[in-house]
Image (cartoon, rainbow, N blue to C red; front, side, top):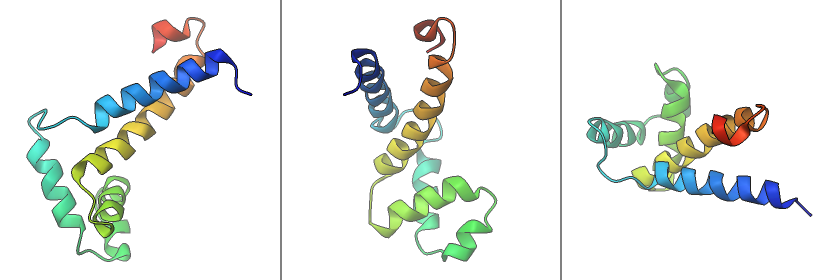
Length: 99
């Protein structure tokens, strides 16, 4: 059974991921994100992997294969970001301050 500290970190990570992933029309690049999703949809996997930003385009392409909205892309990217940030923060002397 996970410790209460682990559960709290997990809940905070999920909260931050949701805040990142469920934003709506925030930032000057919102429309660019929509264009990436539309642009990636008809590509082949080889084209995706040879693109200028294969990681982000791959996430867009995968979401597009399931007719998912931009929010799925943002949730996946937010989860990847928060896994890294929380992993780093938990290794610091003052983890909550680092977060």
